Amino acid sequence: MNKSLSQEQFGKNAAHYLTSTPHATGKSLQRLVDLTSPQKSWRVLDIATGGGHVAYTFAPHVARVWATDITQEMLDIAKAEAAKRGLANLRTTYAKAEALPFEDESFDLVTCRVAPHHFDSIPEFLAEARRVLKPDGTLAIVDNVVPPGPVGDYVNAFERLRDPSHLRAWTMDEWRDAIKAAGFSLGFDEQLFKKMEFKSWAARYDDVMKRLLSAMLTQATPEVTALLEPKGDGETLTFRLCEGLFIAKRD
Image (cartoon, rainbow, N blue to C red):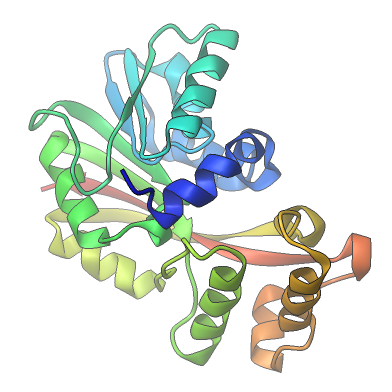
């Protein structure tokens, strides 16, 4: 089987995602728990689990969590980490976001954090999430978002240069429209900024690519600079990205 770009990128960098600060911590992780109020009887599905952080966070609060991904290295790490943390109610399995191997109406909550910008089809992912959710079940999504227009296009180009599996981060309005079109009632959304350390973010590349990415970050237009807020230089260079968080109910 030929690996997709996402499988290639995430497979060879799987260990990084377990310890990566924006993935392992970040405001949106606890916000998901606070906003969904998980119950002890719930069955939860975490799609594109990556390093498994959403699954680990919800497991103590619910009956069962299924953590899915298309990258075996990610699943292996999540399974081992769950065992290390004593999370006996966490299961892992291969699943493409657009083709989930679960029965209709089998989950109380479906989560997906910082992954849809890699998906082949976000509308198909949303349709599958709705299918596997119980009536009145909850969908909780966090993903990188961008402003409409040239600034958003620039940020997507910047991200995709570093990671070719990054297809496109959507705008808040694109997400709102797609969630409603998929048969959900959107109850809450917000934007959260996360601080990124350039050294860690660009660590997988050689000095030539790092200089190019740094130039795109520090020599951008005033509009892009206002959004990304680059600070420092060299080893201390940081910037920020924006996440959109969405909580919706299955109609």
